[in-house]
Image 1 (cartoon, rainbow, N blue to C red):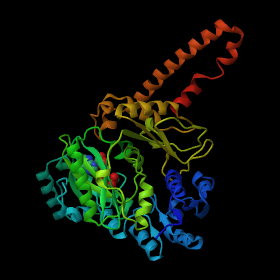
Image 2 (image 1 turned 30 degrees about the vertical axis):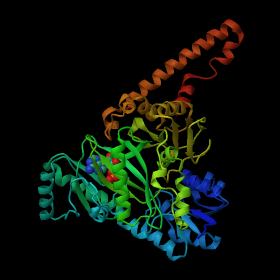
Image 3 (image 1 turned 90 degrees about the vertical axis):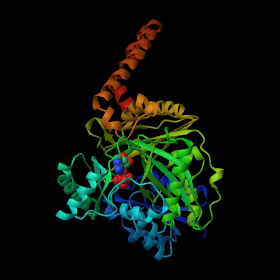
Image 4 (image 1 turned 45 degrees about the vertical axis):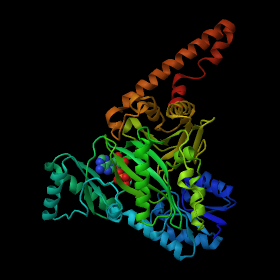
Amino acid sequence: MKINKLLVANRGEIALRVMRTAREMGIKTVAIFSEADRNALHVRYADEAVCVGPAPSSESYLRGDVIIDVCQKLGVDAIHPGYGFLSENANFARQVREAGLIFIGPSPESIEVMGSKLAAKAAVADYDIPMVPGTPSAIDGSASGRAEAKVISAKIGYPILIKASAGGGGKGMRVVEQEADFDEQMDRAVSEAISSFSDGSVFIEKYVTSPRHVEIQVLGDQHGNIIHLFERECSVQRRHQKVVEEAPSAILTPEIREAMGQAAVGVARACNYYGAGTVEFIVDANLNFYFLEMNTRLQVEHPVTELITGVDLVEQMIYIAEGKALTIRQEDLQIKGHAVEIRVYAEDPANNFLPDVGTLETYVRPQGNGVRVDDGFEQGMAIPIYYDPMIAKLITYGDDRAAAIQKMIRAIDEYQISGVQTTLGFCRFVMNHHAFRSGQFDTGFVSQYFTPEVLATQSNAEENELAAVFAAYLLNNQAAKPSQTQAVGPARSKSQWRTKRLG
Ligand code: ADP
């Protein structure tokens, strides 16, 4: 069925990104918003926009019933959930279907299976997918259950990882270095799992040392065709959450890429997947890879795949939801160039990456060839405290990895943000770091190399450079027009430069 009117059940950059493609496809767009987002850019961009409730997402963006109601009132055919919020909520996907609307994503059944890490492992068991050694089912919290889990852990070998089956966003995950710490970490993991996901089931995985996070983008249609669009590497993380992503990975060989692609297609097939999805793997120092989980939605970092393949993933999602067969065949796809994405968060890297929301007093995006900014803000806007503090995704594209990184450094230098602390300076540090540049890094990058002091050094180097430029400028000016130096010179203090440059 052709989609004529689409509602995005989301906000910010992803709502805009989806609506842009919809508009290109001649589809009318409907935005929803909370009272905190009345003036948001996605609201202004849409053909129609409806307020669905107060600021807290539980009273607005998560109100599936209200959202479906809006669709029926406005004659909407389809809902795109974006990422987060209701995007991986099987009940919502089911309610959408029952209301006679199209959910632009996989079936509720696929979401359900892959929503539980344990159910996902069980579902792919027959598909010859490599998995991290661990417990195949939830650990029973009783004394005998724990004793059994300790026997398995000893066999696997410490360190091990206790993980929440319903986990996401790095929550409910605890590393156990030795058996003596098992019970304490187990209690913590269970209580975090209950408080975050209302589901205390946890299981054990071997803790892979020097792990790299590599994920494969898949697309499947409703006729059983499934393809993969290569990998993204997301190993630079803080709190088990991604901050820098790139495609392709700096370390995969064509053979491993092919094997991972096949494994990802197998995972998708195991749950009769259709739509866009991501199969996440962990890769060890010897380039062995193991299935972690599948995310049944569009990922934040999808643009890097779009840039290296030339495929608009949202457009494909819409075609698939309309019931069309994929027209891209696996053999048509090839990797062209290299793309890097950084997440620009309103966070203070010097203060443990804690959110630092406020008003964007200065906000000037970088521009130019090979630079893409996906954001949802303009200068003067406030970043609401209610939602994820991501300001933007900055993505650069070049012929090869080194070119994409150089472009990223240039783009970071051009990005002017003041009023809040951001991850820009931290990302510049990553881009300049020899471990990142050489491709020899893992998910321990931040704990291994980053301390707040490196930002101070960086700003000093920058200030020195600026001071030197400034001094040269003053000298020149003095020589030419001595009377004007006062007016031009101190008008911009060093601290102003610094705020602008570092954000
Ligand atoms: P979530 O759903 O919470 O994001 P994932 O299973 O995707 O959890 O894991 C998130 C991150 O945690 C991974 O990218 C990796 O950095 C780390 N991680 C997960 N499993 C392991 C493991 N077995 N060994 C080492 N690190 C792991």
